[in-house]
Image (tube, rainbow, N blue to C red; front, side, top):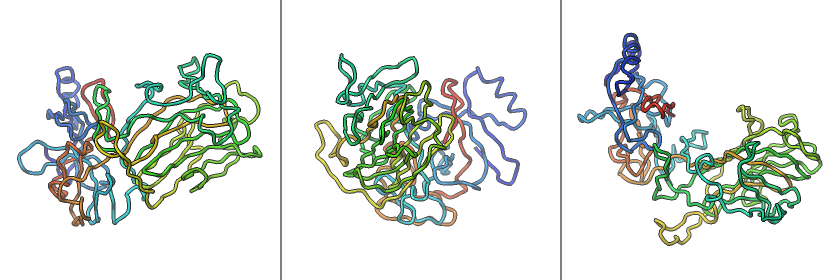
Length: 419
C-alpha cells in the first residue's frame, strides 16, 4: 500500500468475494484501487473482528490526525500493513496508567478526549433478568417493596418501575447489574468474549419515560469505581417549579448540578396526573478518565440537559477475589445500577459499556512517561492483551502511517463505519 500526500488523495478498497467484483470494477474506473486485504488478527477486537473482515482505507498524510484516530501503518519490516489506534501525538508526554491514556500527567478524558466505548451489555441482545438483581413484583402485583415488572409491552417497555409511593433514598427502586465488568467484548457473532482484567471506566445509558411523578420523583443511574459511588440524578423540584440534573458522589455530596425549568423537557416529567403518551427520553452517565458526564436527550438526539465534572482520584479499595476470579476486586459492590423513586416509569434499551483499556506490558510509556518527538506517534491496539504495538516497539514516525480505515465493507451483514 502506498500513499502520496502531494497528489490527489486516493481511496483503496479492500474487498474479497466475486459478489462485489462488478461494483468494485466500476469504482476502480474513477478513484478506487483494488487490493485484497482482510484482517485476520484479534488485535483490534471488537472495532475490527479478526475473522476476515475487510476495511475501506483512505490514503493520505498525517495532517489532521487526532488522538484515538484509527490508522493503517507499515513498519517497513516486510509484514502486512497493520491497523492500530493513535494514543499519543508528536511532542506529548505520554503514559499509560490504570488502563488509561495520560498526557502531561493528566487523564486524556479531562480534556474531553474520551476513548471509543466497547459494549458489555445490551438488553436487545441479553436478558435483563439474568444480568440484574431487582425486587420483582409478586403475584399480587407491584408494591413499594417489590416495584419491578419485567417483560416487553406493546408500548416497547422492557421493565416498568411502579415506585410512585417509594420514598426517595430507598434502594428497592434500583436494579443492580450483577456481572463483573472486565475487558470483555462482543465478537463478530455477538457472543461475549470474557476478559481477564477488571476495567475502571464504565458507562450506562437507557431510555425512560415517566408516566407519573410525586414531589421529588427522580430517575437515577449509579456507577461504582473502587470505593467511590457516583450517581446521576434527574429530579423533580419539591415545589414542582422545574427539575435538576445533578451528579453526586457517595449520595448527598453534590459535585455538579444544572437546575432548569420545564421548558427543556416540556411535559416529559409529569408532576401530578398520568400522561396518555409521555415521550421517551435517554439518560446517559459516563465515568471515564476521572471525568463524570451525565446527559438527558430526546430520542431524536436533541440534548435537553447536561452536566460534567472532573475529579482527582478515586477512594481506594482492594477487595478479595471470589472463587474463580482472575484476581482481587478493585471495586466494591455492584458497578452499575439504575432506577428511581416516587415515579411510575418505563425503562428500555439498557446498555452498559467500558472504554478501551490498555494493560501494562512492554517497555515504552508504561512504567514511566515517554516524551514523543516532533514526528513520532504512540500507537495502540484496541484488544490490549492481544496487541503488539508501541508499548513493545516504541513510537512510529509519520512516514509509517499509510492511511485511515473508515468502514467495514465485508462481510455484507457487518457493514459499518469505524471510529
